[in-house]
Image 1 (cartoon, rainbow, N blue to C red):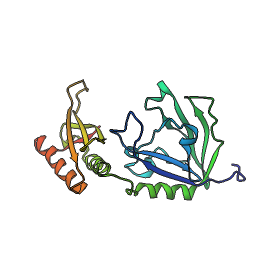
Image 2 (cartoon, one colour):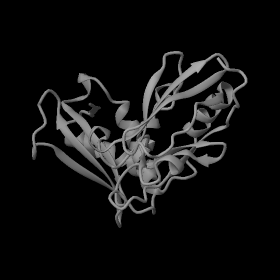
Image 3 (cartoon, one colour):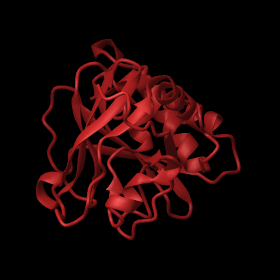
Image 4 (tube, rainbow, N blue to C red):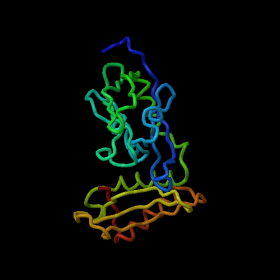
Length: 232
């Protein structure tokens, strides 16, 4: 490894969606910062981060930006579309000694846009930032808090013993009033249009999100004959 390569600082920033096509719904973007600069704003200004607050609900080692000794090709951004169709930005992330490396950049959207050179981060600072971001809720609006709490609550209720419904999707919807939409299917039954069940948790901001989520999960449980739900 080139120990003479400069070391950049690593940061993460949560951004409420502002893209015209997703402004009414969607999890917050998680955008990487390099030396305080929004990396994606420089190399894919019209794109969206492929990492959202939905992807960082679990332990940090499972996050898209997690770094291990095994190199991983990570999708950083997209065009509000699958990257196989409309392209995006990719990088390979790996841990090497006391550094985290971002290398092998790819732009499958517009190859005229210059890509960064290899980025080196101090591994301890990188890990500390992942941990900080994992506990950061300062950016949240009430609908974000409700979506986060609901996703974690339902994720804890897995396994066949918890009923025959599975959670297909949980989505914050940023209309007025805001709500969290939960889409449910049946365990072992292939999804088909019109066969899923949608339930909305209204979020007005007048009541603590934790209490709203508690009552909502109790209602789902009662609706499913005393069982709870698991996430697919």
